[in-house]
Length: 438
Image 1 (cartoon, rainbow, N blue to C red):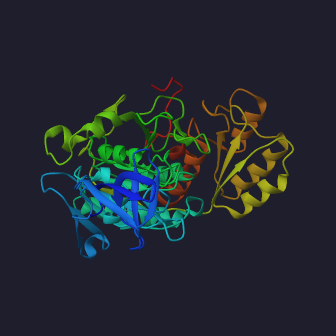
Image 2: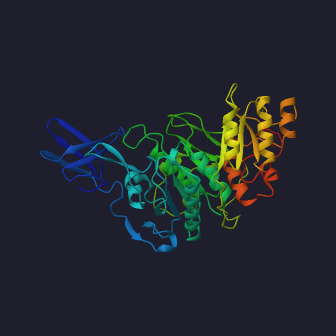
Image 3: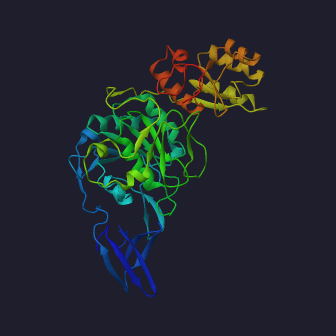
């Protein structure tokens, strides 16, 4: 009996059928049951019948240590004719394993760990795995974004045909936006994660990972987010990294593209039913992947990295009656300030002089809206006109979080063109005029 075999285990009056998973202790056999639950069974006094061998070829994967040219990544070779996908981890639960000795979900990551956690990936590509960070996504920082961008650049430079970034969902949209500004890429860069841990029958880790790999094999050479489209296991949406927002705390379909339908999708039914291990044109290009709108295509751009960031940019949300000292302190300490104003981009008139002083002192201030959809226009009401006179920059229809990341990048790379850059689309983050998103 080996990991990947389908077995029946009888112990006392209990019978279990499932696929053998790697166990943290030799005293237990761990099974993935048909219903999705994992169960650990004490081997003592248990009988095991192997029903089918090698249902998932996980243990046979050969792991090779690579050289320093790609950061000491591990590689799993399956088929030389298949594309190479780099799997990069920053933390999160998507590739976690369950330690049945303690009952805890443990984050472990290299290429072999991912295939053990998500055996459905086997045969879809050749994989390289590396760890950039192992943190909760709320602990993400601009410095880690820089490390991540450099790692992606190295992997593509080393020959990866696509990159999948495994990331905690809470701040995934910020990290995706950061990479969209820092990288020009000739291949897809696909962020994915898991809303529910791998030991739960409702976990979304397998479907999200499979769909992300297929998207990374497709022709859209942009930074994308790949997550469930609905609460069912049917389709994953592909959101442009600069236009995505997490809109629910726990649903599997938590992410949405603001102002439009998602850029594309992956039909999991088509992808999961495709016979892995082949190398025909459809499988190399990504199975079940389709796109709705124009996008950067594979090979259009030359690989380039501009990873400088000015980290001291603050995002301040206006609320009626808020303490003006919050704005004063942020403006005094930050190199740049993004305001999440009401409606068309407004704040209390008492805050306008504070923002004007900040601008006069050399701190760029960008106005965005706390409305989910629509663009800033400070030419309609008196407050907006006062803000423009104070030197506040309209953030167009850029999302507040994306505008914050963009201002970090702009201050470091185009410090003499801040206003023009913040009003100009660089990675699909805004439109040049107010027309409906398609």
